[in-house]
Length: 259
Ligand SMILES: NC(=O)c1ccc[n+]([C@@H]2O[C@H](COP(=O)([O-])OP(=O)(O)OC[C@H]3O[C@@H](n4cnc5c(N)ncnc54)[C@H](OP(=O)(O)O)[C@@H]3O)[C@@H](O)[C@H]2O)c1
Image (cartoon, rainbow, N blue to C red; front, side):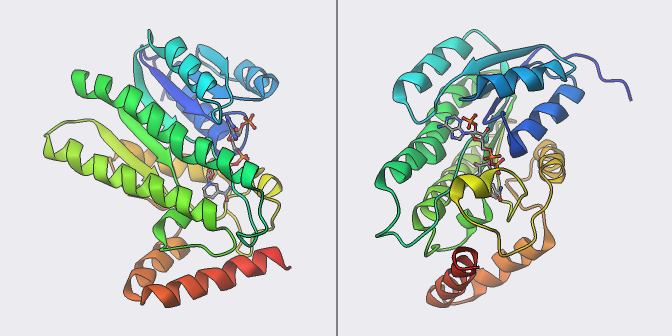
C-alpha cells in the first residue's frame, strides 16, 4: 500500500546504528518525516540518503546536558507525533571493577536523556491529545537486579518503572496519548561491542525488533517484549522469590563475561 507523507515528525534518538536505524527506515516507509539524532553524524547522513521522507539530522551527545538542552531548543518548533527514546548502551563486569566514567555517562544517556525528552515532549502531546512515546528499555528492566551488569539493569529498571507510571497517569486522565517501553532480550547490533561482551542467548535481528515494536506501539501496548522466551522468563521470574531470580540473572550474566 502506498503511504502518504505525514506532516508531523518522528524523533528517534540513537538512529546511527542497530535498532534505532531500523526504526528510522520503518517510520520513513510509513511516511513520517524524521528527526534523527546521535553522535555519529556521518552515519546519520549516510542513512538519510536511503530514506524516503524529509530527514533532519541533529548531532548530539546525550550524555551532555548542554547537548540535551540544544537538542530540545532545535526541535521546539517541530510538531512531533512520535518520540522514540532509543539511544543507550551497556557495561559489563563486577561493579567494583567497571568504569565509573562509563557508568556515569550511561546514567546520563539511558536514564536522564529519556526522562528529559519525555518531559519536554509529553506535555505537547497531551495538549493536542495525540502522539506516541516509545522508550527503549530492555528485558534487563523487567528483572529485580542484574549482577555483573548492575548499572545497566538499574538504568533500564528506571525506564520501565517511569514509563509504566506515566502510562497509568495518561490513561487515568482519559488521554489518547501513548507511552510504552520496549523490553527486548538480545538483539544483534553494535551493543555487544560497546558493552564489551558476548550474548549467552541467541539474538534477534534489529529489523524484527523494530518492526514488532512499531506494530505493538500502534496497538498501544504498554510493555512490549518481542520474543516468547523473554516473555516466559519475565512471567516466571515474577513468580520466583527475588533472591532466586537475582541468582539466575547473575548466572546468565557471568556466562557472557567468561565465555
Ligand atoms: N542490542 C541488544 O541486545 C539490546 C537489548 C535490549 C535493549 N537494547 C537497547 O536498545 C537501544 C539501542 O541499542 P542497540 O542494540 O541498537 O545498540 P547500538 O547499535 O550500539 O546503538 C546504540 C545507539 O545509541 C546511540 N548512543 C549511544 N551513546 C550515545 C550518546 N552518548 N549520545 C547520543 N547517542 C548515543 C548510538 O549512537 P552514536 O554512537 O552515534 O552516538 C547508537 O545510535 C539501547 O537503549 C539498548 O540499551 C539493546
